[in-house]
Image 1 (cartoon, rainbow, N blue to C red):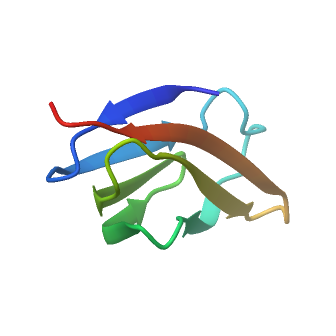
Image 2 (image 1 turned 180 degrees about the horizontal axis):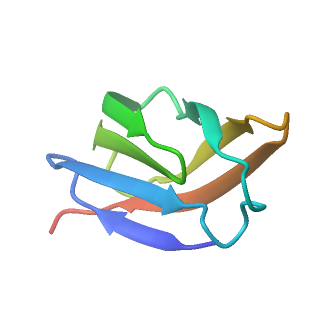
Length: 89
């Protein structure tokens, strides 16, 4: 799982490219981001093969798991996650 270090005052975008996982002719029709309460979701978007979330906040010294759950036109559901460590930068 990827580890990202982030400043608590940032408001940046993060995301996943699902191209390598997605079977031919299947596409993303839903994207849900699951964040701990200390983080703030300030925006999100998705298209047929990628998902993006904008995140701010967090407590310095804490490491959080951020999860993206997608649903596809063929009914597939999958999760991908990354870790975010909050540190003054």
